[in-house]
Amino acid sequence: MNTGNICAIRGAICIEADEPDRIEAGAVKLFRSILERNGLQEEQIACLLITQTGDLRSRNPATGLRKASLCAVTPLFCMQELEIEGMLERVIRMLVILNCSLEKTVPVFLDGAEKLRPDLALQTLGIQ
Image (cartoon, rainbow, N blue to C red; front, side, top):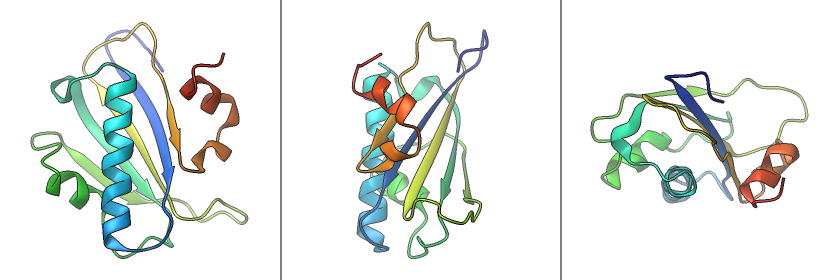
């Protein structure tokens, strides 16, 4: 999404099991992938919104980011994803809000989360 001076990039990742180490690793993998695929530096981030499905209870994804020395000064806001019948399980979603405008953003869907938005997941693979 690009609306002038503010830009947002979405991403999601599926986590294999509700285990603290897997949640932390998944959060770090997703965050780093979003930065890398969009050519970003952390300093460009205004804030990061994170959701996780209710079946992920053993760790807050923000903890994984902080333990990996990421987002040291980035405001993080974590919340539980809405419970919808038939929803994809064990998912962490991120919405990175930037202080700048990018000409093009690349959404990132990893490890099974491509099912959430197949139309956007093609962009992740570089297919339009």
